[in-house]
Length: 502
Image (cartoon, rainbow, N blue to C red):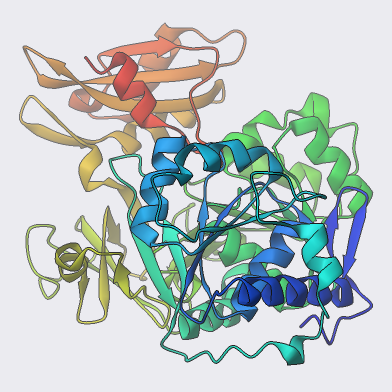
């Protein structure tokens, strides 16, 4: 797409404006540098850095060279970095300049020959080459790149968040990579050259290639935001006339009217929500900014956009369907099965079970984990580990994780159900629920909330008693200034379990 949008701005990175021509040129120069360093088709190249135009150019350059890429979270520890590079058998790493010391700390424990490309201006002592030197010494001609790539070759390794243990490496082929970009319009709505997408998500998360790379593929423009800040978010939307963004509900709740009322956010045409469902008050807040569509997406690193489900705002206005995960996109399929049974033990509408997905972009499996791959990928279906049910119209409702079930007094309760109840209270800004060991109940239900002024814990208990069965009402509600969140703004329940779960 860079060739056909040579004169158009494809990436806006602060004051930098990357046209398709510049992006293609710099990507080709990086590809040449990698090939001169001995990187061949199928070799693995790790990435470690924040959103930047250079990061995108280098990412595309690695793919031009035929490499398999894996993006690592820039805040990871040196120990994690070393372990991951060894797991990947990485031949090269592309990184921000401020990550070089971290790489240097583990380089001695890695196989010889790791090529380090710094995204900085000049080549420092800890790197083999800088981005500037790669561009200066390259021809920039894509036709000179001699990589031979097969549809079945491995293209991307996506690391899971690792909140429950060692992150899984999720494998996608070259053909999958192309199919998920082609599937994006069904998930995101009308994506075209006029689309202006605000990139909030970090580079290491699956949403980054699923969204940002797909927008570039469609000829749209990416506006990069390195770190979410409500004031900066609004200023960028107004200045760049952003048409699409994907903030998680936690971010939406941080965009308070006292901030948003001072900016023009009317350019929005599409708001994407994934990871957690928006509350009715979240939707009301978004609609106060612009007459925009709102979509709730259900997908995962293993499923990618071509095996996903989708709820649209019109499903609520026209079909009276409350916020949910929606129905499968074209080419995808979903079923609910017995969590303890096989893929064929399908449950009827209305009955809760494990959500399984099928579609053209299902992952190849997990890195160096044949047993887990065989358990989770069965006859073209992927067992998600999520719990939910389908209604009689085929709409999917996600109820929680099989590993977030709280067995309290012999009765199983999904923590997410209690969270949604709390979030329905207009004074609750954030809510998380965990199970805490208890001598009487086995596990008791403890809730943690961030609340607005004028709201008391007694109000929340009364709200829960009115909405939930008695055994689902939290035993304790703890008020915090704010709840811990991960890099994408999603609730970090693992942190709460570590601090309060004893």
